[in-house]
Length: 429
Ligand code: PMP
Image (tube, rainbow, N blue to C red):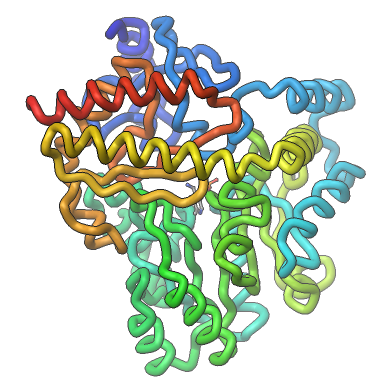
């Protein structure tokens, strides 16, 4: 596999960029070797600077659900670009986008756009505290909610891979109001609620995508909804990854629950920086300028990003690809398990909608602890063989693979062949 130009850029980049990247996972640290640098992408394919072509299962960690450079989205962005980049005053596009988002999530009367998932979540936490007048929040071990101080505890993903318990630079005071519960374990939530009357909210990834793919049991999620309601605690559902991805109405639509506050990111911007948080009127009316919870942003509701988001959501709604995603994910699951069986490798495949993740472990993966039983060395071998055979996967055992609508049958058959070769390589290692 030719990676000379990527090696050259990686080396050059280290001089002025931290680790030659702008987000840690891009450094491929957990799979070793050199991170690829991208030249361009189109449809289901992404091309690195050495001319290698890959079927893209990273999809920018979720946003590019329609594949790269969808023609309708591109036209909308080009049209918006010609009108100007940012104004510091409102545009009609923001209203159109807000309508689309609020219609998709029944629990949302009003929405506020921001520029990232991190921003959406930390604003939602502030809002929950403002609304309830309470301070503490409960988060689940292995769930990632962006890199704000209070949420950078037991946060899965990059942190899981690097085995860093939290982050340097986060003072104890910043996390002292963050209580940790176990995913799929309602008792762990109940215990906190019983021992504490200062809890503003429980925040959850409705499908945990930052410890691989871990699904809540239907009893757990329903009990969590009932318990929070009964305790006067808000339920914040972080749909940054799952919003418009699990279903148009997010994981909430699939799981049959309604959040008090919903956080969005990734797909909602279609590849431009957009995050959002929304809730029913009585909660959102706390936010400035209506209320006294302050939150603002120079580039919030940026017109180019709104144009991209609107076009992406409209196209997604029209294509309604969710049944197709389900079938493709089921096919990949079968192929992964069959190849693992053929070569005597322990493998669990977790999937939900258009997110799928094979864990190299014997143990059923239901939470962060069981996810961590995975053999990351085997994943490493698997990852590089897949890359060699033209499949770009997230370079971590604990990141979900994302399906996109631009993937063709031919792409998926090619992936099947690559899976067989990669599983054989794992067995032979
Ligand atoms: N919440 C969840 C569930 C996420 O998956 C992510 C990003 N992976 C975030 C929040 C943070 O979003 P961003 O990277 O856009 O700040």
